[in-house]
Amino acid sequence: MTTRTSRQWIPHRGSVLPHSGAPMHRAVPSLFTTAILIAGCGSPLDSPDAGPLLDPLITRVIERELEEVDGLENRVGTTPPPSAVEEALAHRMDELDQLVPIPAGSDLDYDLGTDLNGDPQGQRPITLQDCVRMALMNNLQLQNSRLQPAIQREQVIQAEAIFDVVLGGGYSFTRTRTPNQNIAIQGVAPNVDPSIANIRTNDAEISLGKQLTSGGSVQVSTDLIRSNVQGDDNVTYSPNPYWQPSLTLDYSQPILRGFGEKVNLSQVYIARKLEQESIESLRQSLIDTIAETEIAYWNLAFSWRALGIQLWLIDAAVELRDIIDLRRNYDASLADWAQAVSIVEQRVADVISFQQAVKESSDTLKVLINDPGYPLAGESVLAPIDEMVHTPLSLDLRSTLLTAIAKRPDVRKSVLQIDIARIEEVVADNGRLPELDLQAQIGTTGMSDDFGQSYDRTFDGDFISYVLGLAFQYPLGNRAAEAAWRESRLGRSSAMLAYRSSIQQAILDVKTSMREVIDNAEYINATRVARLATAEYLRALEVERETLASLTPTFLNLIFSAQASLATARSDEFQAISSFNTSVVQLHRAMGTVLDMHQIGLQQIDEDAYWGSVLEPTDP
Image (tube, rainbow, N blue to C red; front, side, top):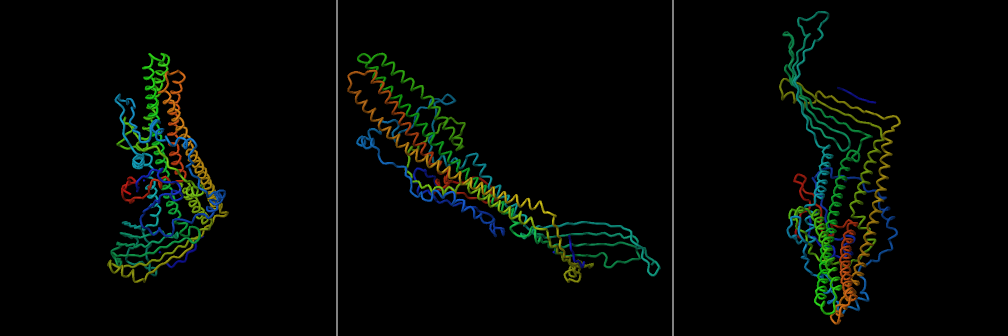
């Protein structure tokens, strides 16, 4: 229905600190403070806010999920008191520490055999800090993830550009030759023949238009016509040729459906939310890359030490074999010597698998760091130089869970999805209203054979025309709009359920990781005690060997068995330390604080500049 009244207007980075150097109670909930700077172009669309407020149900969801841990404020430590074995052996602890394979501060320059080119295997020392820095700068998957926020920023600009001022213009030339009616005055035809009109028209138009955030549009235009009418020689047109400019202001505005900033800026709001979501995806990629790099580093460090332990086993067996060989003419039998040789050769054969494990772990780390100085195709093996130590932690379950809920990218992305669903619900609710559009136009025109004078007459306002109208439309039943609104409400409910699911997943990951940290800390203590006891046992056997008059097969088996037990205990201790460091990384990963742990921040570069590395190393 139309009514008219007419009379003819879108990883900077600080120094990398090893996670073992800072207690967890400092890292939870804030850990190391990191500023996330998101720079953007100034725009009138920066106000109002980028979207509706978060649903108040979110707070109640968090409270409900954490209700059971309200009373669990006691911190859980990972440092047990000294065991009875440690107290009993405290007087010779230094001696036992030097007796074990790979004591603290040992050089890990071991023989790795030959490389694929048949040359001796080379080594390249590397630190954990360097690995993290290289992975941040060069990891291929991370490079792709860094591009996504820039892509999404361009989509925000595209959404905002709908409200830019649009300059329009046009020109046309028209020649019209048409028949006209004859003129008769009181039944007498004049002595002219105006039955044929020959008109030549040049028409130029310039306009400025803008889409309004209220849903309407406004346009100012000027139209300049120059016409030349050629007819019968006895007919004179005045003025001819003539200029006929006009000024027009058009304005249209929806009153019901499509009215308001929340509706018309919805795509801008959603684009901004998606941009924030892409940044969270980048944070997740950074967290995963750093965590996988640390895990690969500690696995490589353990592989090197496992190789060193196996080489120590060989040296210990060779030493005992040589002693037996020297005593073959006295108290050692050929069978004793053959047994020692067999054990030595078996341990030598086992070295091959340990060497292979080191090379494979090195290649895994090379893939993650992807540094030109350490190419994957190169045959140099990475050699970690960080000591395998662990620092006791103090854990607080409630603070850790709250930190995970606040910082995990997947939880934050689910909150953004709730925002988007709420925006879509607002738009769908508005779509249920009838269409009632206001249309208004006012214009003025003038005419003269002089260009300047024609515009003067236009501005005089003697010839003003206007149009004012309303257009109404409403589908009977309104089924499509009602279905879209119900769909949006269901989508919002789905987003809330996804948020609750992400909260539960965060709680599960944090609790699992905390248990692993605590269990691995206990495993370290147990393996250390086992290693000390085994070292004392081997020390006692060595003392007894030096005083025995003869070496019996049973005693030799005891020594070989003690050597193997000590090697296993030392390997288990290193494995426990590696697992502990890995579980700490996984805990930070579950909390979403890996970037804070390494003092890494995000900064969006100028949108007009080349989107290179997001994270540039800087001095602290």
